[in-house]
Length: 393
Image (cartoon, rainbow, N blue to C red; front, side, top):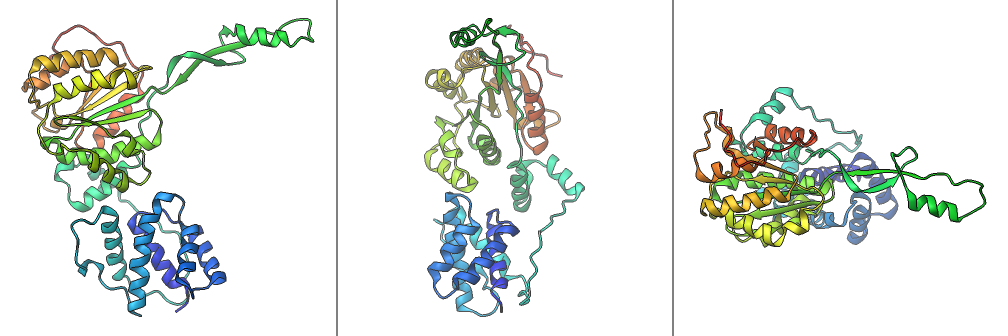
């Protein structure tokens, strides 16, 4: 069999495991191996790594896939063995699981002919299936549906509307005269007159702060939201993510990692209160004391993701919610309980929070996240700051 056939199968394994390897890189790798040769394992490894990978964090996944694929081919001249039959270690990370599943899937594909034509893979997504995923509840999805939803969620973006800042930038037709720039131009001399330099207000998206509940009642939804938070954290700057259950944890740095599985594994290592109770009032108090002044400057918007079922007293929650609302420009609440048609805010925590939020949105499916994007893209309206409990319809 020619070298192209096993190389194409190996690239299929990398794609199934999550690496974005396109046809152009596959063609380049095939030509490079013809020049380098396949007599030495290290030469093949580093040739493929240099041409198929684009980021340093992809090396770990590539290394596991390379060892699993080529060792399997060395032990058998036929199709790859079923990787799922190998003993599974509970301590294996998500990368090893992805590689194992990709190898198992590749083992069921018929052997390729000697003459291989590389074609761009086209995926057809039926409108009915996509629409069903948009409306499906995260808590009732199957494993395959969750994987498909995570892929869709990774492509979601939050188009936060730009706002005017206090700083100015040069503009030929700006409404303001830039006195400093005008004087600097006049000091250069060589002209009978001094042309006025003009400026306008600078506009940029405000910071986005996310407070996500990871208590037991939010467990299934919180894990899905972490994929979404990873996507928006890597898509734009000035995004800060905090997780809370019985305590508050800043996971912004962990979510900055480009690989979603590595990022979520890092988050799991630093968070100690998964699936526990909810101390919403205490967590907001900790945020207001230690983090509010650091991350809520420049008209920040706050996303609060929780079901509002709090173990603390309503007095603490009322005081801290009031302080949080006064510190930010917009406070948006995403609540999975809105998936129920007959939902009413009977819990004390929910009724305490409602007067302080600008928008109360569902957060149990993809459609809810798209609604959030539309709300953030709209112009911010004035908020009634009076303590008045809204009527529920």
